[in-house]
Image (tube, rainbow, N blue to C red; front, side, top):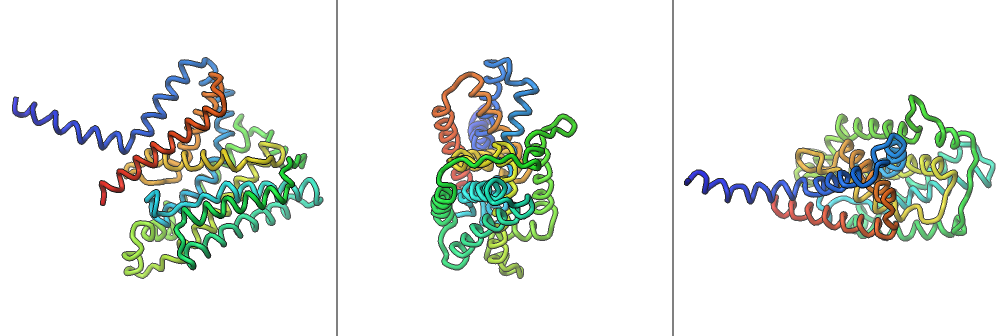
Length: 331
């Protein structure tokens, strides 16, 4: 009886730890199980491929966010975060669409200009965070609002339709039966995985995010690595823009809003796939796929879009609260 009496109290903290680390993932799993029962089309090949296609731009911008989080630390308040990435992607999408549809530019020139625009946003974030000393959450939120305003002025808040053959190819091609945007997501995942998890740069970036003072003591200068993370996030935004232009046959007002919510949700839900509950590239991609599956599943059972957005907001609160509680326990 004494052994059994000790088991009960021990189970409580163990269950609490599991809920903190895997709670958001368990919640997603329960929701997806419900959707698979509620809709016969949820597990169909068409819906799965559609969800993967929808996940592609979410995953790519989230890869950029993962780089910033790794360099700034995974504290959801004081750590590294870049909320301006979706706005940078919207800006790059507008530049590509305008260049191809209105300026008579080729694809290469459009991509170069779009990448330059997105990286410029990253460079301004570098100035705000590493030189002026603002927290990344405040500076990038301000940049998000600023860039969204620039995009609205640049496009006159109107849709720009693109019929460029290259973009149509990215939209319509299905090598091995898999949509091209999904292949772009896989390629980006491999590139960011190699960068973050298999390169000297990635290891040093992780050291900077873990403890800047310790990294500096070991000879690693934190500022250049934090700066590089924001610039790489800009490249991720430009890459996502290619998928956004192809998938939507141009640029449309407001694409940044839902992308922001999905990016944050995918990134931090994805951390639940990691043993140490940290942001990783494979976890981010799986998180993006879960978010897309959830969105499509809720649409299949005819849930209003407003409710879907509200539900995502609640999930973000749960994920961020769980992460904050874990950081408090570590401290």
